Length: 267
Ligand code: DGL
Image 1 (cartoon, rainbow, N blue to C red):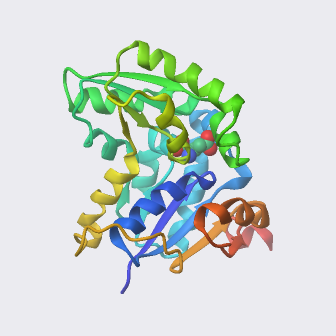
Image 2 (image 1 turned 180 degrees about the horizontal axis):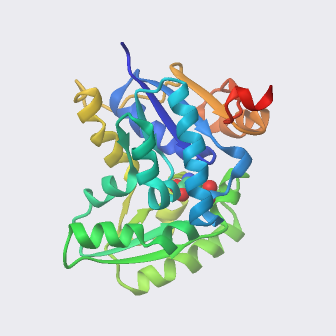
Image 3 (image 1 turned 90 degrees about the vertical axis):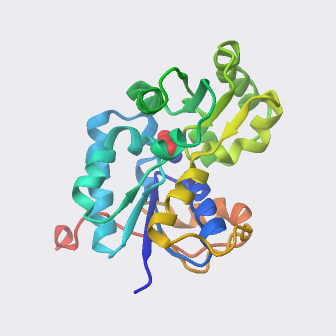
């Protein structure tokens, strides 16, 4: 049976993960869930993130996914154990994948407030690579701005300069994009980050980790983003989601509105 990968995030951020997976593994079937009714996750507390993760995973499992890709760092930070415990299928995450990509000894992380408050990146990397120091910086406005398509302009530039300053002052040698929305800002961030500082997208590592499940790709030539085998679902505003993502995907996706609650709740 062809595997079906369940990929989830609060909104469009998980696209950056989907993209890396399709680039590496080609025509894999995916079910993408954007929990748009509850975005942003990154400003919520741990208990709420864990309850949401339970609902999302139960829904994905009911759709018969054969593995889950936690394409949201906030969920990775605060509820990865929940996803692993209740899903009953292999689970792939971003933080471990990022840690395996690190070779530098001073590392910065840009992420949501919930992710930086959890210290999940710091704990994972400093335990895996003793001697490495991790500096975390939250960027509370970025997710909403990216969802609204504001990925350039004076305001986001000013915020980016402000958020990068403590990491650059700490003389980091690499900066991890620790929220799956942020790779959508990469071309813009690249202009503000000095060339000697490596920008790390954890999704590249996650796509590689997936070799264990899907097998190694026959060719490492990057494929273009073909979404013909991806079903897109959201918990609110499917039309807005489809139009916001059209330019990025290069085509207008069919997007279904779904409820994560079991059907019995409506009868
Ligand atoms: N893209 C998600 C992350 O990687 C969640 C962003 C949000 O909803 O705040 O953390």
